[in-house]
Length: 262
Image (cartoon, rainbow, N blue to C red; front, top):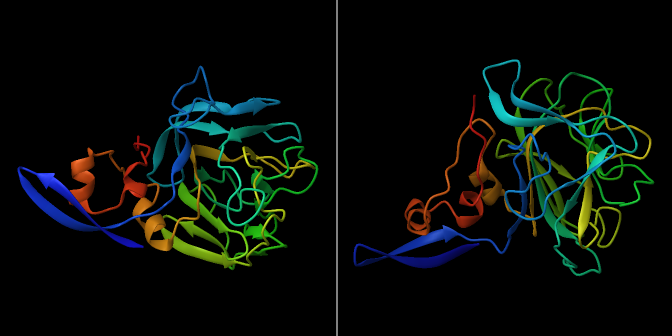
């Protein structure tokens, strides 16, 4: 949604049309502190359940991309992270029905089931989003799988934008990757109003992923907003408010701090 705004620069009032969103960044974890892997840049520290992920000061993919501050998740039913988002009930239901998850992620190798998030805090059923073992597609049967698979040993920015009852879309490096079947309001894809499990699955289909960053927004980001976030390869600074208005990129993108490449 375009919204007209203005900013005072050098005594001159400038009007700009910024892509504004009601979405707020409620959690950002960049994994820059080896002594506290769950440290939050925005929001609440992650809770580490079971065996902790391993930490790498930097980790390259098969090409030229290397991220600093990376965790590698540990496979196992009891091994996962708990993220506190505190979004509350939204989207017309009693649970969190509208949200966006962002991952800077690398799948270490082809094959093996790997999970991204689990809405059941008891971890007693399947996770909500996987990369599949047989063909490396993304999704789950209940919402359909993507038509193409997730590349192995390649850093990418995966964005999952959900508005239960309306849409479930995934993006890679700022571009639409797949439109899944929309889940129902207050169904299995609605988050608990306060927390969500990351990289969890009830029967061990959570083989390792390399993670450079995780973020959570309290609403479904639009295609334009996701495009403004861009891909994992670029670096986005955090300009002062005046610069945000002058650049016209939208606050939802520029609040985001991207990893620096090694």
